[in-house]
Image (cartoon, rainbow, N blue to C red; front, side):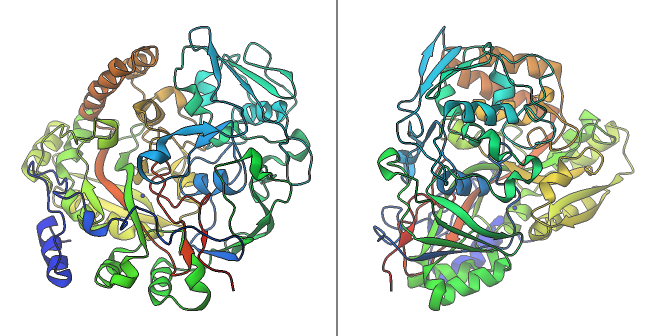
Length: 578
């Protein structure tokens, strides 16, 4: 995820653009008055109308995929890319902008699942005619096998819902050495039926199986840690070539049957991903809109310096897809080591950080609202909650007092790990913390490896900048995923990256998970959000928009609200084919 004050930046851009952009909120916490609508997708939220079949879609990127193995794919935009193009799951989200994209529909399954035993048993039946890229049939045991893979310590980093929910034996370590889960956890009575047995009631399990953990992987195609290089396709495309960090070419999976898959439209004949570019260069090429770039889309966010070039030009602005990501960007503290094992010191960090400066570093109020809790407004009834009511620029005097109370009156030194593209954001944090005596050294690493560094307890620094997005519209996919200390792993630690482990929080997460009344559960999650804010394992920084440019020959481009405002690759294509 991603030094002028909010007001100064808004004024500077407004002077250039002669349009009104959102200012900081009336609470002083930075919620935009117009929610940043100066840079929101125009019209009905779909750029370019309905695509035609055929042609080559070009995707311009500045990074390799960190992970395409469905067991290990838990970051955006890789999850969207994999789920829409390469593999299918038991259920999936409808391909539509706005509220329509929040609806789940059957994918490999015939329906949304049959719950029984008070939502602790879920049965799914597979559709007829499902095939892999070689024409072999997709069977229920292939889904079971991939779910089992998510337990393997050799395949870290993916969604851990199966480990949390399934009635699996303690210590189960996946199938790579031949050990399969028994019928107490997963049954496959025949090739088209799979039955999940859960440790507790999960009323939202029909949503859970939209995740790539519940895509099929045939045992015969297992390649362990190398599976990411060529996941065996159950989706509309297959990998023709993949030169890591340089390019990937997808072509049609001729055994994919549209009649079994009304969600993915598979308009292009070929998809070419160029991973060798820089963020600014991608923006410049799409603004210029020449040659093959007219049939291209950006894989990465529009860089803040290019914002005026886009929204002052009506033609370019009409090719911008930009919606709220639903994600919270956070300054994470490694609570497993000094000095961030000190709760009072962590609280001081809430007051020390200048969120206005950070907001400016990620593009200002047009591209981000200042975050005041971990849960984004989409999960708190649509209204932001301001827990501490700290001024957006911080409160240095209060921070210094808390540091003194924590035994760090003279300050301290620490390191922060970020991707190379987020160095400017880290510099905003660095400058603010220096004002209260905290000296921060920035460790910028390649975007494709930053998650593995932060997730390794031996490499993890004191600070890092990351973000969390709900896997589907429920707080159950937010707080438990990032603050349940029982999910922490030594390596591949992708959820609770702060390594925060409070038994009282863990117990409350279990209590809320057992509530059958979803309204009561949502209220309890909101209260728990406040408690964890008081413990301060992280500082919420911003709630981001995701601005993505597309070429003039692109059609069907819209942001899917589930995948952090990323383009829905299941519906995108070209206006015309030469």
